[in-house]
Amino acid sequence: MIANRGEIAIRVMKTAKKMGISTVAVYSEADADALHVQMADEAYCIGPAPSKDSYLNQAKIIEVAKLTQTDGIHPGYGFLSENASFAKLVEDNGIRFIGPSPHSISIMGSKLDAKAAVSGYDIPMVPGTEGAVESSEIGKKVAKEIGYPVLIKASAGGGGKGMRLVDNEIEFEEQFNRAKSEARSSFGNDEVFVEKYITSPRHIEIQVLTDNHGNGIYLFERDCSIQRRHQKVVEEAPSGKISEEIRNAMGLDALKVASSCDYSGAGTVEFIMDDKGNYFFLEMNTRLQVEHPVTEMITGVDLVEQQIKIARGEKLSIKQEDLKINGHSIELRVYAENAKEGFKPSIGTLDKYAIPSGDGVRVDHGFSQGHEIPIYYDPMIAKLVVWAETRREAITKMIQAISEYKIEGVETTLEFGSFVLNHEEFKSAAYDTKFVEKYFNDFLDSDKNSEALKIAALISGVHWNKHIQKV
Ligand code: ADP
Image 1: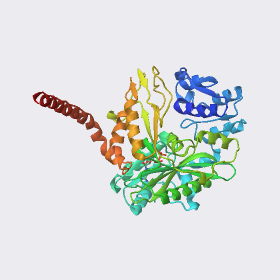
Image 2 (image 1 turned 180 degrees about the vertical axis):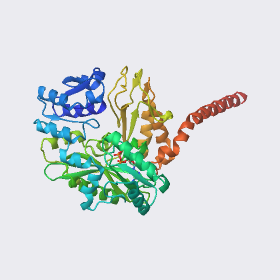
Image 3 (image 1 turned 90 degrees about the vertical axis):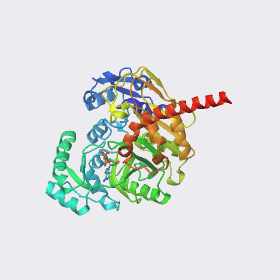
Image 4 (image 1 turned 60 degrees about the vertical axis):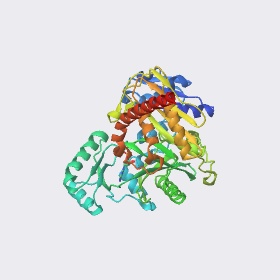
């Protein structure tokens, strides 16, 4: 059973089918016509559109699992994928949870517990407080020691939420109180801590696979530094900037992080890297990531297949020395969003929908023409993924694929993707997480520029014609 919807439900079903496993889909009333429902061998409605009444309805999901004699539940990402009590409920009902143990999920679900767990493993950490900060006075003291700017972060935070950047002491108290109340209302837990803000940071994450027999491998890195609101939009593997030596050190550190919580399955260890190449542990995501395809493209490993095999208790059959980076892969998240209006969701019907295709082009999606993007869920339409021998060729291929992707009826992030891929800073791989902030106005102006270019081209065309006629 796939306790999820959209592209990830379809992605998991593809591998299940390949492995000869029959599939059960669950869906909300808003998704009755969805592709994941059509693709599954069996499908069951689990409630009304709002997530809390359907995709987060644990009792209903278990009821369907029992009815269908499901023997394994894949949670995808989002929804119940990092919910330790759901993982436990699944296991208590004699069903395999295709993911790590409730113990690993719960440690890594709290940024402070995660920091404590890895503290004995000699992993580089961002300077900051070890535990929760009780008062703004204590926080200010720490901030003074480590030096501004600092980040106040919610221990239970996720998805880029619950983070406050503080530039100086005057702002500290107000931001501290805001962070606490935001954390309380969003996560029901107001524990916050203080961390040094790394300037010019890159977000580099390592994919790991570990089994229940003590074996673990790392499948290299993904660079996910192109972010808006601390959320990823463009990802690539390998990173265009890190050396073989740093890559291997990060891989080994990622495996230590996995050991610190007795991890089993596919997981991602996130690091932040400064402009000198120093890296620090941020957190571990205890599930399949949205951006996992870029790793699959450069390693040839089907991560969902490995997740299923590990959940069955099998030993990892891939050894570290079997793995090597083959070529380069880039992913663009195609969101139903109006990038020009600050990436505001743009909900509607896909009046026209045609995907690019060809060698090294992969589209993971959950919609087709005529489908509506429901307002209730994440507005991601698809992930456009390309692979080529070199980074340069991958960039060219992505630009071409974006131009072939035709979507009408909603605004999308395709044009923004094209702006990023054509940007010199992206091409030279010198970008950091500030990219969107730095170049957003250029993106807004790019329309005008392309209008100006069109006019210039037209004028020169007229000129040329006249010239030809004269000759
Ligand atoms: P979440 O769980 O909300 O995703 P993370 O801790 O993974 O939070 O951080 C998300 C993003 O926020 C990172 O990819 C990075 O862009 C930024 N960030 C987090 N910590 C720092 C830091 N100490 N310095 C600079 N940027 C940071």
